[in-house]
Length: 309
Image (cartoon, rainbow, N blue to C red; front, side, top):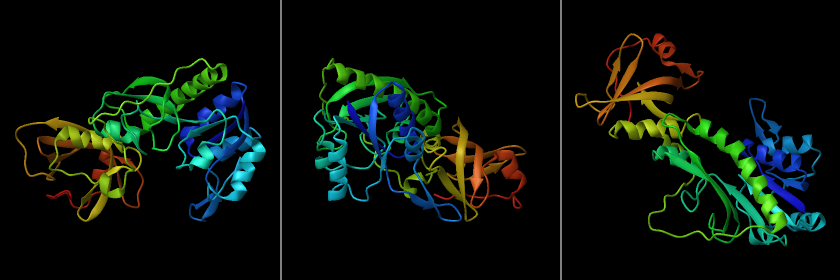
C-alpha cells in the first residue's frame, strides 16, 4: 500500500516510526508549516517533520488543505490509504481521496471524549480508565466506524504528561495492528453508538486552567494532574500567577475560607471546599519549576495570603 501520514506533534512520531519499521511504504508525510519560536524567533520544524527527514520521507506542508497545489501533490503520490494522528481538521476532498480511506488514532475509547483534549479531560474528570481507538474518518468529527480499541488504566496519581507518553507508544502498536488488518481485509468495522451520557473533550483555554478554591479537594487535585505539565493549573498569590504541577490533598471537616493559605516550615496548604490542597511542585511567573520548599524559601512575606479565585 502507498501510505500518506498526517501528523504534527511528538505524540504522532512513534506511530510514524513504527509504520516505517514494520515495512510499510510511507510515500509522503503531511505536517504543519514551520513555526517561528524561541527568543530568536527561529523557524522550527514539527516533531513529525524531523522524524520524516530522518527516514528520508518527502514532507508536504500545505498552508491550506484545499489548495489546488496540495491536491495535485496528493494525486502524484496516489495514496491507497492515509493515516492521521494529532493533526488539524481535514476537508472531505482530502480524507476521502484514497481508495481505502483515511483512519485516525484517537486517545480515548470512542465515542467517549470526542474532541481535541481527550487525555486531559479524562484525568480532570477523575476517570480510572481510558483507551485508544482507530477509526475511519467521515464528515462529523471523531464519529467514524471503529477499527480497533484498547483500554488503558489510569493510575490515581498519573498526570497528563505521564499518560500522554504511555498512550503515545501504545498508540504506535495499535496503529500498526490496524494497518495489518486493513492490508489483509481481516476486520469488521464497529459503528459508534450515540448516547446522552457521552463526555466531551474540547480544546483547553487559559481560563479553563484557573483553580476554583471553592471546589472539592479531589476535583482540584484531578485538575492539577490533568493539566500537568501543560498547560498547567494555576492560581494567583499576592497578585502573582503560580502554576501548580503536582500536589496532594487532605480532606477534613475543619478548614478555613476557600483560598486561605497556611504556610508551615516545609509545606504549604491551600484551603478548598472540604479540606486542603498541598502543592509539591510549582512555578512562579518568569521563574523555573521548583519544589515547594525552594518556593517557600524564596518568599519574602510569609504572612496570611489568599489564593485567587
